[in-house]
Image (cartoon, rainbow, N blue to C red; front, side, top):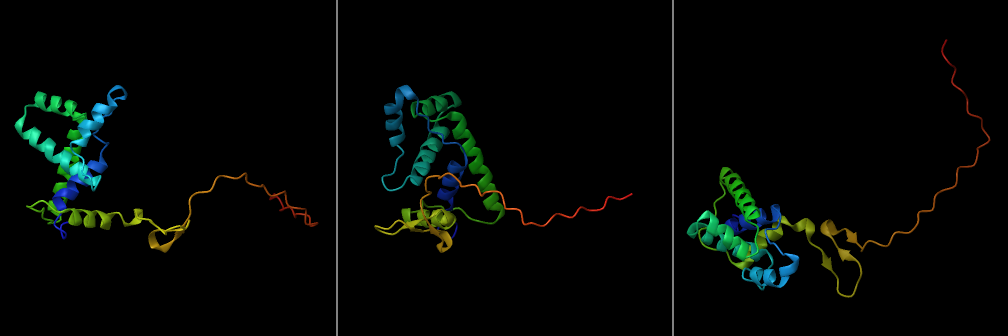
Amino acid sequence: AARTGALAELLVIVAGLAVQDPRERPHDRQQAADEAHALFADRDSDFLWFVNAWRAHEEARQALSGAELRRWAERHFLSFLRLREWRETHHQLRLACQGLALRENDTPADFTAIHRALLSGLLSQVFMREEGRAPRCAPRCAASRPVPRRRPIARPSSPAPSGRKRRRRPTPG
């Protein structure tokens, strides 16, 4: 991420994925919650939701008091406690990167840089489906198929006696 110039955004995304999702969606207000969460959406990437929500939360955090920030989170259907946990996780990751002498980018990274850095960390999660074919190319070129339905397992019958008697071991004493 540091090489692609997207470390700042990747720290936000990774910290957001590491904690429980801060979005709240009450059963009786799902439509309102979806509309509030859509303010942070990016039409090209679900990962960029985290970056947009982070920037909005940081702006609000710097401008509002504690009680006002709680109301802001409530209006946007975000859990105040999970936002705080996200922030603490981000801080820990940032300190770890500083310890490794990784520098955060000063200018916002573009879509390609962010996703190239994400992809390098998610290679074991990437699948490629061949058009019109069931097998898929999985990591390390292992063929993969959807999991079939379970069939009852046929239990082997007990082995037939071999005709030999087992020798007993002599007992000591």
